[in-house]
Length: 434
Ligand code: IMP
Ligand code: MG
Image 1 (cartoon, rainbow, N blue to C red):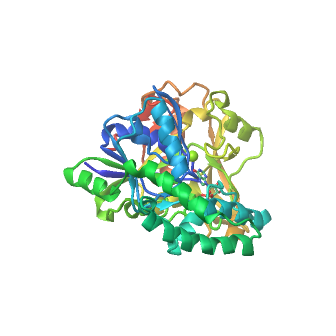
Image 2 (image 1 turned 120 degrees about the vertical axis):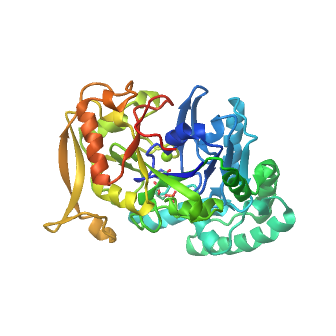
Image 3 (image 1 turned 180 degrees about the vertical axis):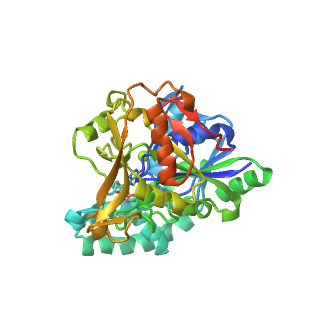
C-alpha cells in the first residue's frame, strides 16, 4: 500500500483537512510534515465541527496513528490546548506521536513575527502572527529549540539561554521592543515539556515501520503550494523548511523520495488567498461577496480558520494552478467546494495572463511583474441545480461536468475526487485515489 502526499495547490485553505479526513479511512498513519499552527483545518464529522491547527486530521479515526513530523514547527501551548479540546469531545488522542526532532515555536518567535510585520509597514507579508516564520529562521540559523530539548533542563536551559540572549538583543536593539524574561521562559517551557512528554517520540520510525509493513501512510501538507518558499509568490510566502509542497514531504517526516507513490493536489473550484501578495484573478465585486459568504451562517464562509480574516476571492487561475501541478508532480486532483459555484450564471477560468500586450502562460518569478499581469478569461455556462447531494459524476449538471473536464485539460491532471459539501459523504469519487 502506498505513501500518499496531499498538498494544497493554490494559496491554502483548499480543503486539505476535509480530503485527508476522507482518504484517512484507508490509511494506517496520517502525518503532518511541515509548517505550524499558521495552518487551520475545519473538519465536520459525526462528532461535531473541529478546527485543527497541528493535530493531523486522522485523529478522528480510532485506529490511526497520527504523526507530527520533524518538519513541523510546534507551539506546545497550542498543541496541548488542541489535545485537551479533542479529549473533552471524547476523541482518543493516545495515538498521537510528536517528533522529538520538530522545532518549537518560542515566545520570541511570536514577538519577532509581530515586530517584523510592523516594521515592514505597507510591505507587510500579512502573516498569521503565530511565530512560524521566525521559528524556521532560527531552525536554519541553528539556534532553534527542538521538542526533545523541552524534556530535560540540561538540554533546555543552555539552548534557551543562548537563543534568548541573542533574540533579546534583536528585539530591543533592532525593533525597540521589550526583552523577554529568561527564567520565566525556561520554567514555562519546562512545564510544557513535561505535559507534552507522553506524546513525544521517534516519528520517523513510526512512518518507516508502517511503510515497511506495507501500510498506507498519508502525508498531509499545510498551506498552499503558491505560498511555497521556493516556488510560491516570493516574498509573499510562508517560511516553512521543508517546504509545504510535495517535495518537502519526505524530508518533513524522515523518508526518502522513492517511498512516495502518489501526490494528490487539492484545489478549490475558485481561488482564495489570505495575507498580502499578488493575486491575478482577485475579484472585488458582488461575485466575490457571494462566494465568500456562501454557507457563512454555518461557519463555512471564506474566513480564515486561524485568524478569522476574510479571505480574498477570485476565479480559478489555471496558469498558477498548472504551474503548481507541475512542480508538485501531481498524480491526481481533488476539486473542492464545487457546490459553492451552484447558481452562478457563468463561471470564469483564467487561461493566461496578459503582460504588455503578450500572453504569458506560467507564473513570472518577479513580484513586480506578477502584480501587473492581467487575467485572460474563458467564460463557461453555470448551472442552477444544487450539486451538494450528488454522489456520481454522471449525475452532475452537464455544465458542471464540462467545467470539471475543462479544469482537467487546463491543469493537465485528472480530477479523481470532487467535494460538494463539508461532511464526509458529500464527495464524488471519480477514480479511487488508492
Ligand atoms: P505565516 O505563515 O504566518 O508566516 O504567513 C505567511 C503567509 O502565508 C501569509 O500570507 C499568510 O496569510 C499565509 N498563510 C499561512 N498559513 C496559511 C494557511 O493555513 N492558509 C492560508 N494562508 C496561510
Ligand atoms: Mg486553512
